[in-house]
Image 1 (cartoon, helix red, strand yellow):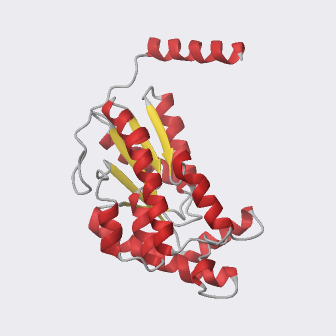
Image 2: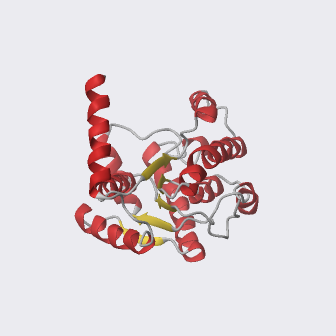
Length: 243
């Protein structure tokens, strides 16, 4: 398996999105996913902290506030390793486009912002191949905070960094913690050539730029022929009716 500083040798493509909470990256990835499938490409989606192997342990630890920054980091690394082996690498070997909502750069920012040694985190994730395209949706802290609170009444405990006791009030703790994360993302942008998208722009404008960048990466992958798409659609309809 390739290391972090190497591209994977497989025919598929790995495209990841990164950004602080409230950046709108998941919305852009969802739009990208629908567009690629409509164009006939075979796409596989994966997201951070979604492995059945570890997700329950992380949820339990968060609920009871049992997780130290290092424990938090190790659990997320176990989640990532499980998804890398069983979800990410197989479709890449099969020539699919893998879309990842957060990748190792999330650990590089959040874990380090929580005080975990940066070199240690990088060594833990050294099994990860470098993505073919990494999009970083950059948004100022106040804009991020406004977006989050417009959709729900309060910030989540760990999202606001309340476990670090940075401030008694959640919004102020969020500002401090997510500012740390933002600073690290900015440094990673230069180091790992993350493609910066201005997340304050209109959604359609962002998506146009995203598609341009994606098309450059997937140029060598052939989409399914029209009749193959129609056959797949008929199969899905048949399954839907049967259910």
